[in-house]
Image (cartoon, rainbow, N blue to C red; front, side, top):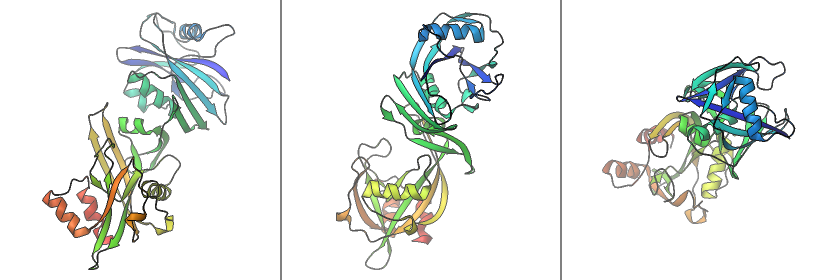
Length: 333
């Protein structure tokens, strides 16, 4: 495994970024990265970082903070350990770089650049002042397949544009909500019938440990769709995980997609941008036979559609339903 350094130099709220566009057969061709390179024989990571900074930028690092080790694994390129460093103090004059073009970029601006998917994740850690010991990034070509930070696997999302078209890159769940990036979720409404024939909905009480809307009544089943999974597969998986109910994708009726947004300033800001695919599942479910996922669902119950709407309008139900969505599903139940 190759041993290398990757250094980000900070000045006045900006990072010195390198657009790699001068080397032939460069795996980083067209990508924006920090500066750095391979350790030479007998070098420590700190010595390598200082040497590479001087060679590529003409600057002398007078402070050097080891931020963490990034393990890069690929089915195309050689694996390597990237020793990640942050430099906030330096002297000297910036020079031209033989690897590419050097530019100072605002911290917010860098996320609009052509970055490796995994770089977006560790740059978030860097910008938010969160150090880590070990980050494992696994790629198939340029697509990120897995990210594990200090033993914890990050949930990955495919990113979409606001119009629903694929943006063709992958980020972690935390990153998507931090940057307010569009991603896909599935909402599944399980529909039964009252004794009088009126439609009834299975609703769930969210677990008290949930960060958003704890102990509130919500949709039958809902969840984010991870990278590489389509919405129907995700819907079936979520139903199995949350309720212990086995269904097939052919039992789901897709009725449409709604765009949903939510913003919260808690915990570095939370900006949710969802393309929510809505499904109807007709099933007479015996509630006593369900196996509830306690980390997600506290309890479930059946409620008639009209009674549910009345309780919401009267304020007698502690809930987090989107009224527009409830009205949207009415013709299909």
